[in-house]
Amino acid sequence: MAKFNLFLIVFLLSFSFSPLCLCHKNYGGYLFPQFYDRSCPRLQDIVKSVIAKAVAREARMAASLLRLHFHDCFVKGCDASILLDSTGSFVSEKRSNPNRNSARGFEVIDEIKAAVEKECPHTVSCADIMALAARDSTVISGGPSWVVPLGRRDSLGASLSGSNNNIPAPNNTFQTILTKFKLQGLDIVDLVALSGSHTIGNARCVSFRQRLYNQTGNSQPDYTLDQSYASKLRAGCPKSGGDQNLFFLDFISPTAFDNSYFRNLLSYKGLLSSDQILVTKNPISLGLVKKYAASNEDFFEQFAKSMVKMGNISPLTGFRGEIRKHCRYINKA
Image (tube, rainbow, N blue to C red; front, top):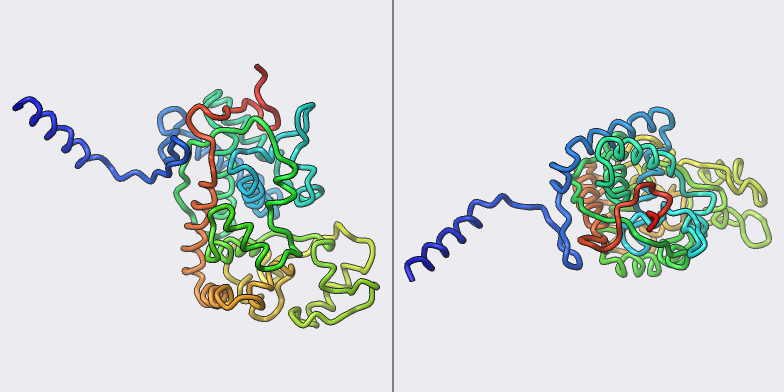
């Protein structure tokens, strides 16, 4: 009995002095920030260095890498399925409507993966690299930082249908977009905060043309779009052609991660319909837009929380999935 009591005391003391762990449980596995501390201690420095060089070459790349993580997590979870090229057994998600001629940054992920493989072979997943790249892209653009839980593994396949159906589209209704978020375990606060990522980056003419012209191709006022702003957009986005012409999502500070995106919405200068409906279609989202427009600090704080939450969507952990050697292909048996 005395031995049992001694064992119990030691057991309880071991928990009392254990450090607090920022862990997220998913399907029998855990994500935690220290996952690679021993197996690849220079991982985060390597990712940060490559991101810095890539964004220095092209400021737009920060938004592209952030978007890549978002489009990955909404399809089968955060498993790097978006990075896979087509094979005989599946069609790449790169061919889906939300990604075709739009998703980019794959070569930067390749560059990071090559550097990480040289440092610590067959150790770090492409999914974790994407999560770190999204964080570092935000920070280098002037946005908030957050601690990234790690330990994801890579998928063995892709889902073209999931990519076509699960990713919110620029012309979706507010309720459709909110439903797509809720299906991933995200709420209306996450929806508004994560939409704030549109404070950097670009959108194609084809993504918002319907706001400028009616079905017959004539100008038709959209009263949720400031008409002087609409006139400037029409100059570069004609009623036909120019589908790939690019426009800043936030014309005030297009490469700076800040809350001007929300101020634009309150002035009816949101580029995409999916942006402007945060103000016009729901009183709760309108209240959140006003809150973030008034406080950069509040926006940053919630954005960081929502990014951690999004990055925890159904990760593969434990023995599920694999650690790809090359992010574009599954490992050969």
